[in-house]
Image 1 (tube, rainbow, N blue to C red):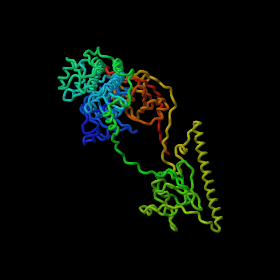
Image 2 (spheres, rainbow, N blue to C red):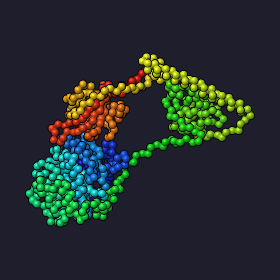
Image 3 (cartoon, helix red, strand yellow):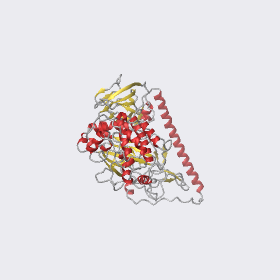
Length: 636
């Protein structure tokens, strides 16, 4: 599956977005339109890391068909397992959104159809390398249980290092909708197989027939069964032989065998690669950097210069991270009363944080302290250290005492012009008698430090005693530091997170959770039960997603390779209420937290096959009962 090469306008590769085009798709910001076809429109976008991707937005009419959505979701899951060198991988999709979409890696190259129309038939050596690469791609696609069904020149992209097969599986989903019979054409008659045109069973051999048609088209520039109305072409495919008179001799056996009417008579993919090697002048196929004609390679260069993604506004400038000499960075201010910028009068004592020892406040800054100055002088000339009262984006110093006058009340200071930046002055020469003043200042600092240390010791000793009491099993009391927060004012509440001890794990293996059913983790024997809406703990919704139904429950999708353990599920906070099944793959794990306090770990083991009459998810479930983290609040 994939699809960045829809029918494109001739005016250019990257079309600007039209008025009816979206600007984003599920968080992907669209940079240009790549084309449009029977299934929908294709846009250029970028991943957060800057990798170009092609977003195919499915037509709304298809999204209204429930059977299309079901098949499309199955094909997306299968396509995400296709990781071949000659395919464009599907990296993201949402088949259950309001308008289904999928994203594939962007391939900077023209389609085979565009290249032949613009530059004519390709050389034999190029066709051999093309067919061999396509055969490898089909081998991987068929290995994922997918039949392409719509292999044609516009679904083969020509990259610098080989072809890329795209749009595998989409035609199967489109077959499910009634729109295909009402003016919407999916598939190209010129490249269908006889059994496909006659409505018989489609198999991997159907793609081999299409591969032979693509080879004939690439080497001659015209379809093997001619052109004209769809009905006429389909009649010739079913009842007549192809016209291979213009096919080069070295390719005749390869094309003839692929175009056998009987699917059983067509060669296997490994035989096709062998035929390409036999037709090649060398003993083995080598893919040089210049495997394409020069004119086609030039188009790759043009497509590599994709439009840049839309720019977002630059972030606001941040404060310097390194303080100038003699300055220490200030800490962000916590909300307080009086308003920011006002501290207690000089010399008073204020708590620096709830539960911490009281410390002396800073003396007032000189008049003219800056309004947005992130650093405060650590040592004023001839005076004790300054402590900042506030962080960036507000006054580092607030004048609490005007020169020769009383403290400024907030209502008088509010609305005044911002003071001019403070410039530290050089040390003044010592005056007579200054030694005595210095001794007094030093003594005052030592006294404050001693008082603060004693206070801190008492507080910490008290808290340590309370912790010991709780460890002995006795209640800590209402006035304990753990419940009060240690503030001198008392009151308030402090959230407290606790975890239950690790219980024994109960494991239930190979659960087939059918869409429309749910699991209750508290049951002694966890088994699927009918119902998808209610106060259940985990359900597989028929909308195609796992749902945390219980009140207070949530899910977390663990990263690929992340080990699912009790500790990991307790620590994770990337909560969501539902996870679409198309986001899952074999081996992925999901943490489940229930509103009743249980923890669960879901390990995906598989999905229902395409021919199954029911849609289900096979999983292992590990349950730790009453092990979920809990948050309580104590009020003093």
